[in-house]
Each structure stands twice: as structure tokens, then as C-alpha cells.
Length: 152
Image (tube, rainbow, N blue to C red; front, top):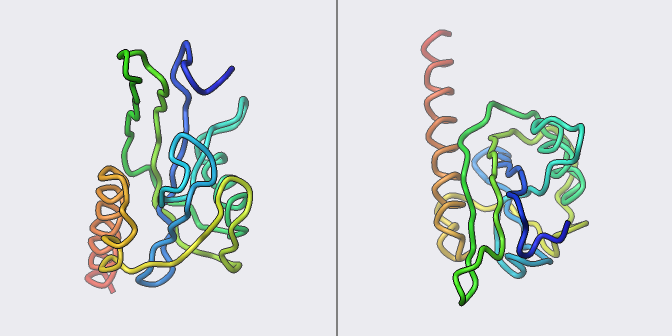
């Protein structure tokens, strides 16, 4: 099925990947967000869990291995054309993850990959939902680290 003007939503995944205090950003090489910076992700394949899709997409787009965490949130991305018809519709399941191995290299559906600090995010012109998800992941990561330190 063509992704433009679908007759049903597509299920996609996004992954906020952390390496120390930096988050992985990729620049999309294909529509609907061609040229936009985002987190790695893509469509779930038939027979694949969303967790499997998340790991695969990060590996395909950047060559990285990750330790996948729990889902962060679900986002509906619906774009209408000038006539009000649904041009794109994605249901995105977003995860947080930690870098495990590899060097980020742009591949597959992206043409650039960079590590950025939270202070750097403004210069990337991220979709507001992407920035919200990254900050949500950062806050949960801080809370988890704080709880782990308290238990020690």
C-alpha cells in the first residue's frame, strides 16, 4: 500500500537513543519528513513486534546496537492535504534506549546521523512532538538514575 493517501494508519516506531548525555538524531532522506531531523525509526513489519522493529530500525538507519527500554509514549501523526484529505497517517510507538555498540553512520532512510545534547536541540528544528519525546525520555532517565543511586 502506498503511504500517501492510505486507507488505514501505518504503525511505526521511534527510538530515543542515549550515549552518555547525548541523544542520537538523524536527518530523514525520504518523505513525508524529508530533510527534517528526528529520532531513528520507521515502520513495523508484518510478524515483527514493535520492540523488534525499534531495534531493527536503529540498526538499519545508523548501524548501532542498542539496549531497548520500555515504551515512552504513542503519538498519532496525521497530515492532511489542502483539500482536507488524509495524506499521511502514522501511529508511532516511541521507546527510550541506551547505546550498546557501534558508531553512528547514516544509512537506509537517513542521510545524516549526529549525537546532540539537550541544549543543542533547538538548532535542529525538530518537530515539537519529537522534542517533547526526547525531553520525556531524558526526564525518565534522570528519575531512573536517581532511584538507582538511592538504592545503592
